[in-house]
Image (cartoon, rainbow, N blue to C red; front, side, top):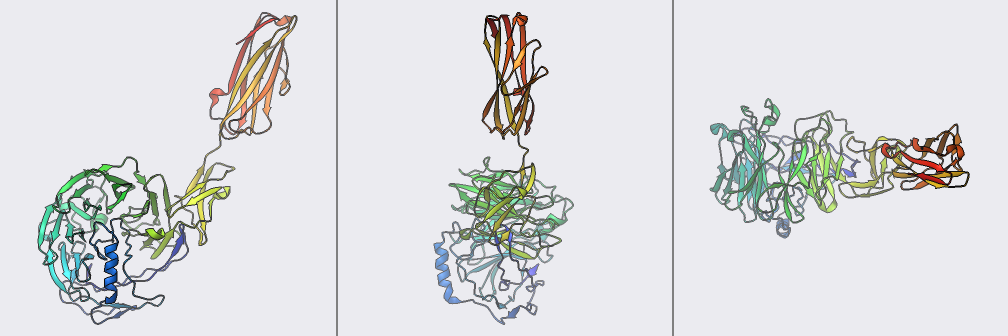
Length: 614
């Protein structure tokens, strides 16, 4: 990972994917950018699709003033008003450089390459303070034996000649984990670098350390602790967290997450807020687990929010009054499918946060892009854009890029060697397997809300979205389960005595009420009749001492129907007490509430003129 600086080499890829439908891919390629150890520049030939510039590359100077004016007008707090003040442009981690220009041409783009004379071991990120000041943070990838610890260098734009270098630590001497932090430029022009368990402010003019703070490491030993970068809220408050190496393991850099005996056997991370001026810790909290991904900050509904990808869940912490607090109204959100590994960071796109999985070890399970509503964490959209690529492994330790203005997410997978653009807008149909299309639906940039059509049978179905670009692939995460329909048919029985000189009678009214939630398609209610009475019914069957009532037509939820029975009371029945019990004996669909399936009335006949019921 020893690398000389060179002009960024781009393979232009446009893969239009609408609502998770992959309609175009272009293979990603890689090239050797001049690797080697410390020392003089080695002569190397550029890759076949690059041309040696044989000298510094300065771009188009006439564009610089306009780009600087654009950056100054962006309002990208709390970062310095320039093209590249923060590692991914803004605190929302969009990677969107709206003020920059692409100077190439499509489809036949030519790339010129120029490499620096000096070697910058494992450069992690580059920031600037305007067109004439370029700074490099490197040395933090201890996987490379040549990397002995973090440094910051100022280099000349164009030539990449080193103006000064500030070595911050030698982890070979301190016997500590060498893992990359980050360098950024704050709004006041300060260069602030976080590395290991330290944070420092660097003088841009000469590289002197103006301030330095040792940060807390929680339950992890300092030698096994590193702060993997930082983000910041609009007021400048720096937010950072730790990652931890397994105690006793000596693996360096990212290899600690891959090659330590049990990389998960580590203490939980801690989250800290740091004053950007004094570099003192303002607040800290122990997280539920060790979280390997980087922090993303934003302001949502007026409150600072911090998003963190955990091993299996996405978390949000609030920072409302100078102290961290877990947000009980949001998540944690499970986001992995079986076999997937954790995300490396989350990006904010309007009202959603987005992550892509498989940032850990390579896995045969295709990666997913997951979008979660900031307002309602139960609203989750998931897509596997490379599920049909045929790749044997999936691995992408970087994060998504997003374009909030166009509601578009860009994802990639090193295993599949592909790049995808994902846009949920423009859906023409949402289907629910054999049940058919949704009766109504509404889609945004990161999800669809749909009304499922009625189904003839219970079970899970694939939900797929159709757009002008095609139809989304099936995914276990995009399934809807129809529950078996139920309908609660409640039975009640009324009894009205009617007296006479020689003969009386009792008129019964049987009431059937569908208490839902589904429709009652059919039902049978029966009653065993007391012996010695003459029974009759106008709408049920009386035979062999039994009343049988059927429901011939469906009964909607909330609807009621009645049936009738009369028992004649004669001289032989006087002095008797008799009971009629009506009970539901069958119905479809399933009745979930058996407690209201039967009803009874008891009557007594003293004289034909005197009959009472209760």
